[in-house]
Length: 83
Image (tube, rainbow, N blue to C red; front, side, top):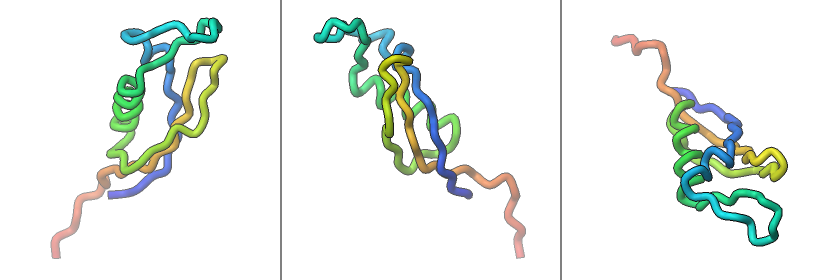
């Protein structure tokens, strides 16, 4: 098993498709419910390994994306040698 530091970009527009609402400031920006965003982040990280911990490190409001940094573990491709 190996541990990796990864970054992932999450499309906020894709995560808000089922739970979008208008921004109160009137900028037209879609907002995502926290549980939907959490689910989307976990799903993306699972595709890359088993997430140990993660954090949203930045949000690009113009592109509607969130940058996530994570530590994941990945099963080693080598089989163990028995002694």
